[in-house]
Amino acid sequence: MRTLFRTSVLALLLALPTLVNAQGTTARFPLLEQFTGTWCPYCPYGADSVNSILGYIPNARALAYHNNDPMSTPDGDAVTQHLLTSSYPSAAIDRLLVNLSTGAAIAISRTYWGAVMSQRAQQASPMSINVTGTYHQDTRQIQATVTMNALSAISGTLHYNAVLSEDDLDYPQKKNVNGSTITLSPYYHKRVVRKMITGAYGTQMTTSGMAANTTNTQYITYTVPSNYDISKCKLAVFVTTVVNLTVNGQPRPTLMAIQQAWQEPVLTSLSVIPVELISFSATQEQDVVRVHWRTATENNNRGWFVERRSIDGDWSDLEFVSGYGTTNEQQQYEYVDRTVRPFETYDYRLRQVDFDGSTEYSPVYRVMAAPVPTETRLLPNYPNPFNPNTWITVELAQDSDMNVSVYDMLGRHVRTLASGTHKAGGHVLEWDGTDASGIALPSGIYFTRLVTPHHTATQQMQLSK
Image (tube, rainbow, N blue to C red; front, side, top):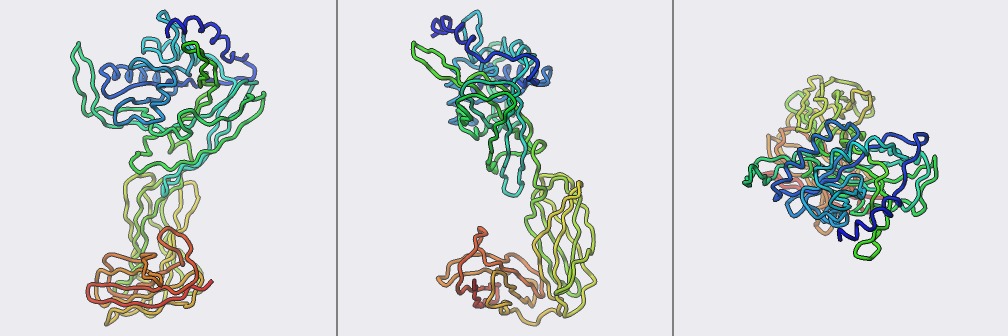
């Protein structure tokens, strides 16, 4: 194989896209793709080399594909094989075939990484890449638009690749120290390829290249698994050109010659949908109403305006409660409304405000300010029939665990409206005619069921569309 590489290297290097003149070019962000494994005793030295390169080449970007260890992926293994990786640690630099004294190779040893990356970083690129979009902290979904601009003509078949990586994954790592192999634990792996969103070989953009001053737009939608620490994840996008390589006398189209790369942290490069509100309630306690809410994560959260209105009245601000800015830890908030009047019905909601002035509203919670009831009961919903919203009132004679759920005509559970411990008093719950997944339900008869340790009740409702 080495002999075949030597005989074809000149033709291959001539076939690679030539760099254009300074006019119609932009700064290049070269991509180092490292091949590594926790079983490889010399791979920690490779990781140290990448750390060093990223330190002295500002435009350098990097990914790490793991092989035969807990962090390996099928797509990563396919890339490793596709780029003819034969030793560890090794790395591909912009997927170029490099002519070394030992022969030509795509995946080269760490001895050469710094020199090749430095040379590549000084060469301009005929393409720029721009990525915009959102990361939704509630759904963990990335939605991004990738715009690739050809500043000068680029020929050939082009693929774009989108890859999610993560830093600081803790797995034990073998390391050779003075001829002996030891195990490092803890050991925090960086740049680990977690998901090749566009697959091992990317997505084909065009088979006819791109003319100068044209753009190609692609879209990324990906839901980040819950076991990924999004605060340590980066999104990488890069464009490859198909190059025809000859291996063992057979033509082999290879996704090589990276034209340009882009890589940034998800939480700083994309707009983050600011706050994940995981619970909100308003409960009467004696002669006050206690408003309570919790968040799972917050981003740029200045705080909350607690708003109240009487039935058919206008919303007004009761209080401002400061937020925690940006945090990935759960937070709890509370406000006590001491201005309620007996026998009045109030709606409460939250107006969340970012430091940049943007706002979001919570669902509405209704409370009837009434004396503590003498018995526990489930009242008929209002209105009934309804479309699509109705209000369900529960009165608790004492602090108690309770569950309020909705069932269909066949007795199937479709939605839980309240569960857990609740204070004595009236509780008004809203149902919007949807199931637990938020899917609108068909017209028909449904039942509300109240269950406490000492009381069970059921009321019939009619959803009419």
